[in-house]
Length: 206
Image 1 (cartoon, rainbow, N blue to C red):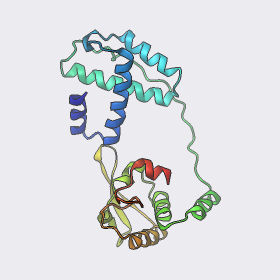
Image 2 (cartoon, rainbow, N blue to C red; image 1 turned 180 degrees about the vertical axis):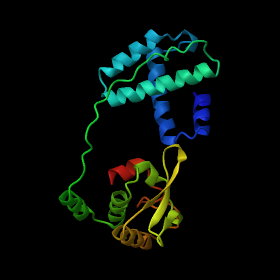
Image 3 (tube, helix red, strand yellow; image 1 turned 60 degrees about the vertical axis):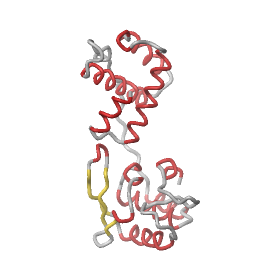
């Protein structure tokens, strides 16, 4: 697994994806037990994924299958196994749903619920840029260009893209940064000592 993760890191997989794959690997090895990888069959994998599918949503089941396929494809390409037992596995069909969006009233209610400059800055930044939470987590103060109200974010596969934020967001960002007493370079910081960059979990909680 360490060799697999090293290769995927070189390919540009995000730390979050690698962490998720590590969790999926633990689930797989706990189910299969102490077995030689060359002895794992397609039926073993189908049984594992079939039992999991009874308890998971199709989207979660799909994530698990993609990891298994990725792991065994790499294992086969690297020569650890002669035949890939995961080559014929299929992902579940997922119904496409119309995305739900917030109404103007809901947006205003959220704005009113913000109690601190950090909460306001976070909300306005997410709302005006449309950034993913993993992109926001990585940002530093120096990444923000207040002249053009823009920022370069690093998305999936470390791909760069430029996003823009509105004047309301710029005002709250400046106010939040001016109020901070710490010297940490991160854009959004924890409020308790030791001051450090907010994690995805803490961003999601706010």
